[in-house]
Length: 348
Image 1 (tube, helix red, strand yellow):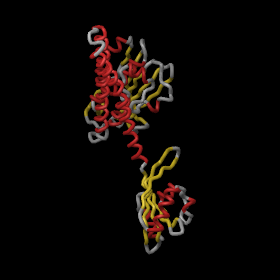
Image 2 (cartoon, one colour):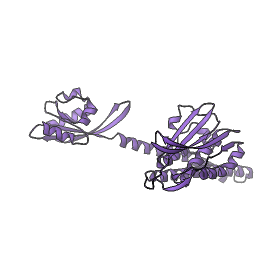
Image 3 (cartoon, one colour):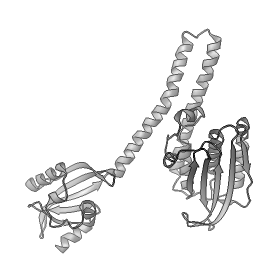
Image 4 (spheres, helix red, strand yellow):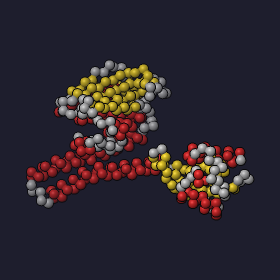
């Protein structure tokens, strides 16, 4: 039996061998982790109670033909999906049905994410497209000679077209960032200059919203990174702080060098963007970086948001091997912290 046990141990999937008497002859560690420890020698029904799988095993034991079946189970509070391969084997030690469990959970979750992504993009595009088609139809018909209506509708159409353009731009940006996420950037970047350029570009928006911005960098904040992508990160965070903080808001940006960050296990620079806005309910914090997730969908769209900004930020920070931390207290504002590692070696 030692030889059979060794063979099962070498199978990368959870695997077990069931004899003609429906008892488990041998099982590898993966099968024990999945079905329970000490299952060898027990009747199959005590370890596995999936009717479709049991029927497939009985069929293979009866006619020696291979079978394949898919089943789902609930483990640790979440659905898991398996492809079960049943084959008849005969060795000098034993004969019976070899059952291998191929875990399809991650593959199906990825497929579901793709379906959700397509559905979300379709939904985001459908609303402005429907509005544009309606206004075009109106301008071609009843409002053909109504100059006031023409001017009003064209303004709305321009706004809806700009919304679609922002969505397509963010989708392309997200795709590009994801494709580069495994490649570490190598350029020397001064975060003070990056944030300074962002503040210069956002000065008109801050002025329109009577927003006070405080930024007093200590200097010497240079690290290895991608300047354009880091500028995108801080443009998103600071612009959100200005927009969602409300009129008369104060946005404070700080840079700090720390000798060792516990998560990154080394020296790092921490950039914090804090506002004095209404804050965010803690319920929403874990999902803020999900694609198309919005705390307030209507307000976000009115502000020109696409629901992709923080997802892009997360992927850029991941590419820099950093961390994004979000904290907020309703009524007291929010703080977004970007923790970026300092790479001192050229080959780091």
